[in-house]
Image 1: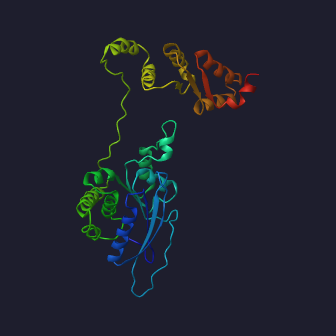
Image 2: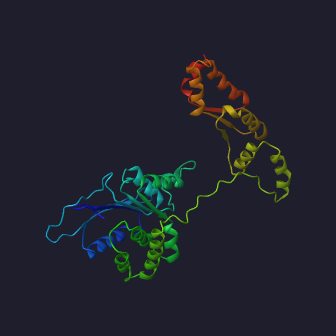
Image 3: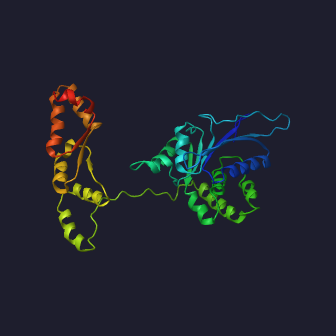
Length: 336
C-alpha cells in the first residue's frame, strides 16, 4: 500500500510486440475502477532486441476533497515499489540502473531469455549469465517473483502481457483485488487465452513464483561411448590420456583450433602434453591470481625479479605458442 499522501511507483520493461502498452492500459483501468489516480508515461525502445520500451506508472488513492495530484513522469533510482520485466535480462538492467531497492522493491520477471544483438554478435559466448541475474534479484529485491511466463503464454496461445498481469495480481504488490484485473480480460478478442494465462500466472505468483526453478546440475565431463569403428579405435587411446586432455579432445571435436590453459604455471605438464598429443596452438594464461602471486612474493623478498623472466620462459619450454600475461607491456624491459 502507498504511504499516506504518497504514491506507488511501478516501472515496466517490455520488448516489442509483447503488449507492454496493453499491460499499462490494463493497470490504469484497474486503478480507476478501484478509486485510484494513475499517471503513466512511456519511453519507446529500439528494434532488433537492443533494448526495451519502458513504461512508468504512479498510483495514488483518490481523495474527493482534493485536486488531482501532480505526479512524476520519470522513474527515479531508489524510488520504485514494483518493477516488472518481460525477460530476465531486462530485470538485470533494472538492478544495474539502481531501480531495485532491498527495503521496498518487488521485482516481477519472466525468467526466460531473449538474446540481444550484442549477445548474438559476440565472437565467443557473449550471453548474459541468467543464473547470476536470478541471484542478484534474490539479493537486491525486497521480494523477487520469477518463473517462465513465456512458456505459459505459448501454451495458451497469447502474449506475455496477460501472464505479467497475473503475476502482478498474484504478488499482491498493488492494492487492487485480483477480480478487478480479471474482469479486464473477460471480454474482447482472445479473452479465453488471456484468462487462462492470467489465472495460471496468478497461481504461480501466489506461491512465490519460484517453485519450478531448479538449477541444472553440474555434471563431470566423461568420454562418449564408442558407436562406430573410429570411436572403437580412438576412444581407448583418449581414455589413457590424463583427464584434462579428455576435455581438450572434446573441444577439438567441436571445432576448436587452439587451446588455452588457465592458470598456466601449475599446469606446465598439461601444456606439454597438449602440444605433444594434439599438435595444435596452446596459449598459457598468466594473469590475475598467478600474477599477484609472483608480485607479492617479490614484494616480500621471497623471490627476486628474475622469477618473472623464468616464469615466462617456463611456458615456452613447455611448448606454449603464446602467453597471455600482465607482464606483456613490460616484456622488453624484463628480457634485457
